[in-house]
Image (cartoon, rainbow, N blue to C red; front, top):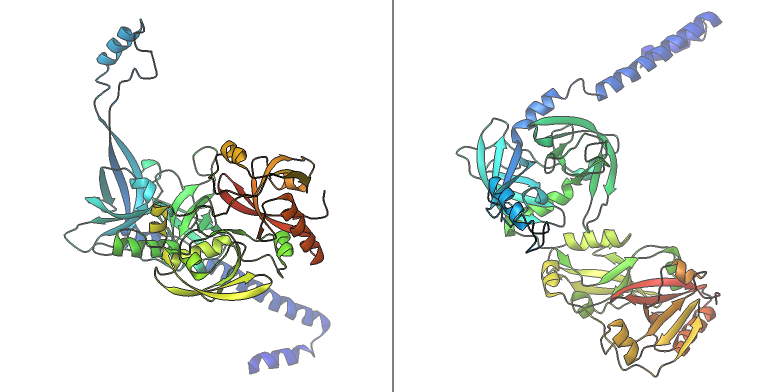
Length: 491
């Protein structure tokens, strides 16, 4: 530190040309140091890492017995003059009714020395036999411990006569866009193969409720499914699951289910042979800016409750129209965040839920049930009293009719169904833009039940008196509810 100060001090007395040369030398030194740092950050070779993790990566071959069926089905009608011709042709080419075996390939990885193997559920779905090939060439038969179609994860088990090499899960939340990653697996059945790339994006959602995918440009192809995505420490931060491609081959857009999701699923499959996710018991939708304005919320956040079937939420006092702002002490950002948090919470745990209702916050305590049990029971349905006499009219770009027995029969609704039936929608209206269509049923307006045009008009007047620019409607289509906010100055 002292030498630097002396050098700078003496530089002040240098001639201008010498001073310029001095600072150019300093700048060149800084640039050189930066280049060295960049080179050091970029690995010279992935070979040491690949050598370390490869023994724990496996190729998976599944065999499925497919029942035979007559090859004439769908080719020629029974009694056709060509029937005998096709039968002779098939007899020469084998018995079409004989069962046949179908093989499929995939990848996986060992997570414990006693032989637990993780892969994708779609790799082993419907398989009668599962064969695991190790990097050493050893082959073992595997059995299914458990599987979870929602995250496309399956847990297998092999029995070996000695401890197996294995890898461990890393923290996928620490992976940053731009970090190096490698994918190891069995692409296109070519055997053990390695590809390298970077984390292209985080928190991708494809189609599942619990999706949390890491996107990568590391080459992932058919057969890579179920294989691991490693960080530079040799930790598994994802399970290679899907690709986005118009050709079926890698174009640099691959998706790996994040390890923080997978590890929780694996723990449950190992312990119970199935998943046990928490269940709140509500139907919800995101809070859009117009919905937030209509309800008097400060910002568009939380999860808006559209239905409360029999279950934990109903028992705790959660109501249709509540906005869930906080769950178990964590602020709710949107529907996806709430669903994942509830699913990750222990079944039977009592949690605090903060809701926004009638302009105020209210804290409730809910004891969670189990989602899998709820799905099997298929609880739910509408509740309602007797409908008022028929009444119709036009408002907010909608032609409406009060519910009656004829409309219930026409729409296939239960006798208890009530509300205003949309019989026509002005295609130039905001209602049409927001997806309302003939046959939809408005059951609530301003978070109060409506049975007639007068009810709806009263709710609109109340919204105007409160200084709101829109009104919140609860609309049901084929029994499925959703909230829609419509501007109240539109006729």
